[in-house]
Length: 375
Image (cartoon, helix red, strand yellow):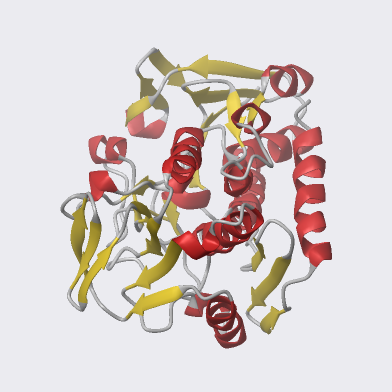
């Protein structure tokens, strides 16, 4: 009976667990994470408006683990020993015959004064902080932006910032406060979001113009202060700053000898196996994968990588050659509380649809459908 360990309880980790159990009913599967919960990050954008409460997005996993006969080990990974066959945690060690690392990445917080900015995808607390800051703001400016990892083109997540930007505009208009609060979008690139495709970028920028959202583009970021965003092209006065930095690897990776990409992520091959390592795979934000420079860091991509990792690990444990690859697909709905812009990109081309009310409903339906499996 094979012992398989998964690090994490996010999209990649849980997709890997489901796929492993689907193909192997006998394997002993252990999941390592601080708590047995899934935080449904895609719906954080709906917390400031009250469309979702914090408790709606914290999904207990006890029933999921029981249903799939998965052991849960509470703790944080701190390193690996025995060639990866033992995971060292804050709560003891866990031995394995195969390992999938799906613990997510870490936001790069090196810019001076970054403590003055809220990083929304850090979790529930950040979204609540945005909600409370918005409620307290009577007039002024909200600045929203994102940046990347200069050594890892794919290690950025800009989609949520576009969603917060448009959702806040919709919310403020509903509250009849939009004329008192200015919205500014900033980005060091002159064509932000170009990984979404040329048409999508034009639609996003046109939507900002239509909504009277100011832009500050093409200027390298210098840092933050309590009341401003500093760039080489001038400062942006701001009463509330929402900023998504680029991604890099978790600090515990430094305690291992696993190969790293230039951007600090775990270096993987096309089959999601950590390069040069037996029975060690990676999926989601923790990994650096071969592919186009627009390959996204998002839940959908993490799911696809996790399923490939699970199948390949089982093949390797069975003495077969792991040859499953994952589809590179960017798929998202940029939501604005009452409508959504569908964006899809593959190696064959890209598709962008204008904001439609049905797309907002589709995003909400997908949330319900996805989370149903954990209840």
